[in-house]
Structures are given as C-alpha cells and as structure tokens.
Length: 400
Image (cartoon, rainbow, N blue to C red; front, top):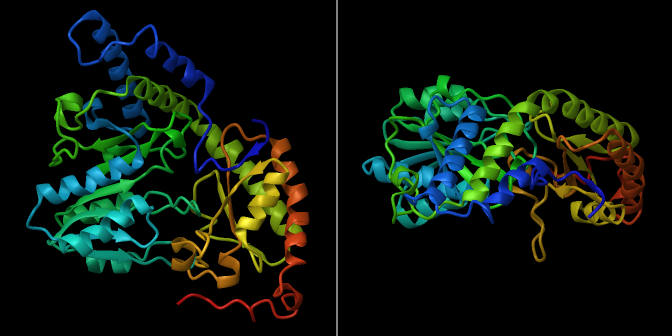
C-alpha cells in the first residue's frame, strides 16, 4: 500500500532487512530452539544472537537479563504481577495518570479486585510528572513503581533513571514501560537503577507479536507463564524463533540508526510542526516540546474532531492518529489530554504525527500543504468556529 505513513507510534513497517533475517526460520531453519539435535541448535544459536542484540540496544550488562515475550502488554503485566508475588506483604503500587492501558487497566484491576493501593501520580500542563507527588507516595509499603519512559501520545519523556534511584532507596522495584522509547533514544541500563523494562518489537521495525522484558540480574522474579523451561524458566512456551530473530535484527538496525533518529528525523518533525503552526490558526503543540521523543508531534486543533481530521487525511493517503479516545457513544478525549488539562474543544482535535527513519522531506512537504485546507474545511462546519476568532477561549473549558 502506498501513501504517507505518519503513525509509527502505533506500529512500524517491518524493515526488509529484518524480514530477510526472519524468513529462513520459517522454512530452512525450522527446528525447536529447545531441542537437543542439530536442527534445534541452529535455531537456538539464532535466538541467543538476537538476545545479544537487544542487550546491546538497551545497554544491559548481561544478555541473560533479556526475556522474550509476546509484546509490551505481556511484559508490563509480567513485571508488575511478578513483583507483587515476590513481595506479598507490600500492598502499594505507584504509577502515573498517563500510562498506557496495559499498565493502567492492570492497576485498576489490582485495586478493585485484590485490594492494592494504587498511587496515580499527576502531570502538569506539559505532561511532566509531578515529582513532589511521586516523592510523597514512596514508602516501604510500595512493592513496585511503574512509570513509562516516554508517553505514547505526546512523546514527553519522564526522568525514569532518577525516579528509579528514588524507588530503590525506598525499597521498591522500578519498572518502566519503554515501548515508545526503545530504539529512539540511547539507553544504558547497566548503569541505572531500573529493575524491569518493557519493549515491543513492532514499534522499532520488527514484527507484531514479539517483545521483551529486561530483568536486571538479582531482581526477584516470579514467572507469569508457567510450563516448560524456556527463557531460563522465566517465560514458558515454545519460543517464537522467527519473531525473536526479527526483534534481534531490528535492535541491531535501531542502534545503527540512532543518530539519524535524533538528527534527521527530529529535524523533519520540527519542520512539520513549524509549518503547521504557521499556516493554521488556533492550534498548539501538546506535551513538552523541549523534552520529548525525536519522532513525535501531537498538535491540538481547536473546535474540530480528531477523527474527522484523520478521515480527510486518509483521503489524501496520509496516515496519522487521533490523540482523542472518542468512540461511538463517548465524547471523552484521551486520558492523556485530560490529565494535562488541555481545553475540552482542543483535546478533541488532538492529532499525533509520529515519524520514522522511512519518513522523507517530500512527505513532510505534502502534509504541510494539505493540512491547512483540511482544517479550514472542518472548521467551516463547526458551530463553534464562527466566534472562535474573536473569543477563542470562550468555548474552551479546561478540565479540572
């Protein structure tokens, strides 16, 4: 399918070099990596090579700290549930109000069904974590802190290494959902106090259905998947060898392209942002523009619906995503926009453009060209837009 793809925080294209590494695992090298014979050993060697590539990307001290999973959600759930089982007397959890549902939904379940106390740390208008509230929530009763490295909607980065040091001092384990951050920014987990980290392959040009959980050596761990002895008895089930090898190849490529991600891709993102802000009135960047992922731009367009923007972008062959969680029967914007206090009429029009190393200058030029017309067309249909130019905030109540 052709077009302009700017929804890379949702998923990325599998890199052709990644696919080339994977294909032999479906046909020629099809053995079970846990088998003793030569067919299995050949695949087992590939799996261990992939583990080393992920280790290198994360800057981990040991390849044994990498546990392969089915993706970010499994990794998040495993990290939290494992810790709670390992520390049964500790009944408190700390997280943030802007986490991915893979963390928030589990915490809500643990709170309502198992009686845990969950401290949800707020953020400010730029999506920065309230570190004072975080400090107050830490205590000897906290089993685990789970704070994302980078927000999936705004790209805002959290100071996870500092937060991890504080958690360790309080006697809690620290987990970070780094699904959006891995492969985009440099990491050195060997020198950090981070105990557990989640990643997902399809966010860094590997296939869907494969991920990993980093478990720092010495961390108490209880497996969520029980059965065989795969992954050193930390994650039972026959290894997804093609996916694992694909993740390893993607990790190797991500490390190679890290500089490009933080220079060329960042420059494209900034040019897109400047172009849209200059050409379109009544819009603004959400999140922290000075401390975010290099590929992510989330702009709130006032007085229109994000879903309508996406439909018209799609007519031009452009893929982006809405920062709003509006669905049929619901008028609520995303929990991230609400947590930041984004005005109601702007939160509904939040649109995320997430670039990748595949993004080109010509694609950015096209988006800058077509977007003003799309916004003007939709605002002409908006009952609120007529008075917006004279009193733009009159129709923009802020969430409390």
